Image (cartoon, one colour):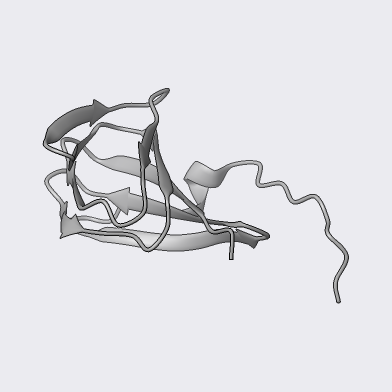
Length: 108
């Protein structure tokens, strides 16, 4: 069995580039209890309502996203953080070209 080790990612935002009229994603880290995926949204792109099988944290690295969940809409910009519990339905709308870091908290 592998020994635990410290991992560092010096520039997560640079690991996925915004592509015209697209949403792209890349898993940048899988480690004990966590998986991190970086998304790049072109302006106007939408992730329609969906759920996650575990709690998640949403952080905008660049740009402006609108997160809708739990009967509320939040404008998420760099410096903000959204926590969503397991299976909470949510949608993501790119107000402008944006990069999002999704952290999935998995204690399995």
